[in-house]
Length: 288
Image: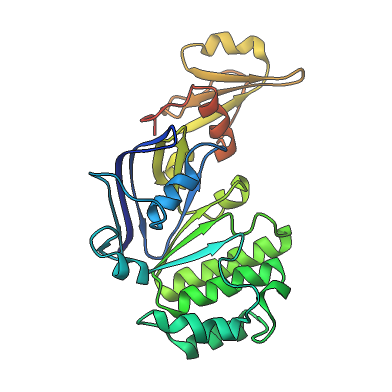
C-alpha cells in the first residue's frame, strides 16, 4: 500500500471551533469514510486538507508525499475534488472546461479525459448547468482522474441523488480505486450506505477524532444486546449505554470475548448505532 494522504493536526482553532488531535491517512486503493454529526468538524477538516484554510503551526498535511504547506503546487497536482455543487463554470461545456483548465495541470491527459467522458456518458458539448446532478458528479470525477489525481476528496457527492444512481456512482468509485491506484476520502451523511462500501472509517465528534481504523475492526469492537429490559440489571457491569422504547430495549457492550448467556439477542452494531452512543457520551475517544 502507498499513502496518498497523511494528516496530523494537533490543534486548529477557527471561529470558536477547534479540531483537536487529528491523525489519520488514506491509502491508495481504499475508500475512507469521514463521518460525524452536523457540527462535528468535517467541513473544517476537509477545508484544511484541501488548502482552503491555512494550517496552524505544528500541523502537517501531505498529499502524494508532498507537503501542502511547503510544496503546495505539487501536492494539489495529486488531489482531485468531487463536490455536491460543481466548482466549475456552469456556463461552459465539459469539453471546453477540459480545454481551458486541463493544461494548468502538468500531467493533464486530454485523450484520457475524453475517454472518461465517453465512458461515463457525459455529453461533451452540453453546458454543465444542463447536466443532471449525477452527470455533474461523474464530470468532476473524469476531470480529476485526467490530471493524474491520486487522492480524491469528496464532500457529500451523492447526497442529492436518487438511491439507484448512488449505487451506480459507488460502483464507479470501486472500479476507479482498482484501476487508478488512487485513494478516496468521502464525507457523507448517508452513513448506512457508506458503511457498506468504506474500507476505513474516521469518526469526528465535536472536533475530536473518536477513532480511525478499518470499518470492520471498528464494528467488531462492540455488540448490541436486545431483549427484555428486566434482564439488563444482570449485565449492569458490561452495558455501556442503553436505548429504550415502549416496545424494545437495547444495550451497547464491548466485544470482550465473553458470551452473553442470558436470553438476549446479540448483534453487531452499525456506524449509526455508534454515532448514537457517541452522542450519548458512552462511546469515548480511545475505546476503539
